[in-house]
Image (tube, rainbow, N blue to C red; front, top):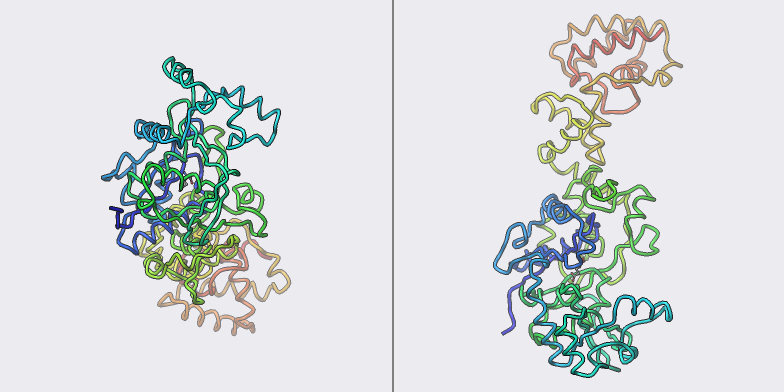
Length: 505
Ligand code: GLU
């Protein structure tokens, strides 16, 4: 009986940083699972030992954790269909490859890497396929006894799929509809390698079967492999067990030309990975969305809309809302252009929407990275509230808020030079003495006090605002200046004015 339950998987290869396209694949899988009361599974596809990168699996798990896409089953949480790391399932695959050989759907190939290399040098477009395999060294061309002997003596070999000749294969894709492939154009993919490890193609089918996967949502780059998977399914397990396929649209470069790569991010100055990734071999670190100051809520919201919408104008969606509204039918076929400005817009919206307490610890960590000591939370939170709407990235809190906790290092005196006068200096000197008399220390009372001192010096409040801001903040930015003064406190305000006056003639 075909299984009924929804079981979907995110199946990354742990080879480095996690591309935002990978996170979107995980997200769509997750949403579908949650929507159908199903299971979201993490499977680590690490059969290619030459591409093993230490730390990459842990990193992927951390990325999912940061995003809140918690797998129900996976190498770190276990589950009834484990192990969830393909390298630990090595012993499972060979029998399926051999079953295919018995049924005529696969064959042993003994060509050495050198022989294959020589072929490719002779014919740069060489493909091991329906046309060329008759000239190669394999169990289709060798006498049966020879094959037997070679296998017995342990001669290195691979197992390849035997693509049927002159056939068309029809694949039903939930997003693309029917996709047709011609078998003569597809090579006889290796299924089992000389080291006994399966390739991706064999492992993915066997594991999707054994793990009872109901739907495969993966990137469009895997569509050309699907006919191979279809044949394996048909011939190993029968199509009634076959999961439904949906190939997600590519995420394109901002100019729409080609798939977005890490290099594009480096070149254009935006992150492509979910979190910072340090290559353990070169020590090189690539920036991630998290470290750049993105909220996971914004990151996911932005990703959800790269290739999907709910048919309305709504753009802001929380994860539970996405779970409710998401549908495969509304995923676009065409590639989705990545727009970093739009990503920042989402982040800004989420910063404004969520209470500071929701991301307080992250902001504090950014301040600590800059060695800025902070007051306790009861004091800190109202101050951060004041600048919240101006912050598009969480790191902006440091830029925008630093002056509350440390006096400015530099002052933009040029901004006030033109209007500065001895009269104004006298007014500030007088007001500095007044500050001690302001009770309670509130934006309104501070403002009143400044107005009355200014009036006494035949000045207007408005003439005083910019100089005061430069004295307190250092530059022409920040929230309303009397609120700044209120938050700095009477003593600090007084000290900053005093310090500034000693620098101004
Ligand atoms: N291991 C493949 C990857 O790295 C998974 C493709 C699939 O989901 O079938 O993306």
